[in-house]
Image (cartoon, one colour):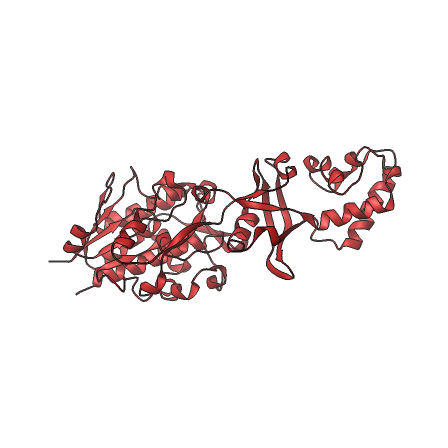
Length: 397
């Protein structure tokens, strides 16, 4: 009789684990507490599901314990994941930044493809099933914990797996938000709520040391800042003193300070009777035109002819290095992923099996690994889930 494998958690890691355990020849039961599988998948990539990334070296985009993931990524990488989805009716496409999405731009198609694969493999899926103890399950056979982290608790990731791991002697590092929107000290970002910036540069420094320096998109919110650039930056500044952190926004990364000054001078000279706030929308989004002059000590009501050379230069300097003072992080429930969780030193990276409890396997966000935005975290989930599934399916045979 084939071995019985129980997978706890029906997110991307759990679905991959169940599929590959079944493909290894085991009878598999997948337990999910929600009313459907893949609930968190539906909100990833703004509903489009940035399922993976075709970067040549994905490990460069995984700041937390990347070496632990070599075996998992070798077992199921981005190309393998795309082939799996394609074979089950979900073709994918590659967009800017090597990000991979379903061709339909619908996260539901990713889940539908995985469900199709699970049915074909004979996996028994039990919804509305919450586990309270691992003991009885481990007596029946291998158990794969794929319960997620502590982010987006509304999708079912309430941290149950941390308690299971601790109960079996595992070290659980405190979960913290990673890829999280940021709260600003100043009120001006909040006054721009809803404004999205593209092709800007965000830089974070601690003294002379650059912690983050990237081009991309960001968003102003009622509490501060968010968007891809901010989320990526957040994972670099989790452990630093925010009072000592200097974050600067370059609104015109394609121009040097001298080029920008000449551009501003031309705009002013061409519109001598217009107010400064009426000229600035030619340089920045209109919503920022009323905010920027005050931030650099200029009078936005002045006509272009009245703007002094010092004011013009101060405006240019501000556009190149606009201070964004960070006061803190939004609640962990709003994080895309969590940092912390099961200590990977206590998990075999070749199999995802516990070094403390034979027959117990880990997968996904429950592990202390996380990546940047762009599909890397979902790939981590699928890869660790697949390897844990194959290993559990073969364990003891």
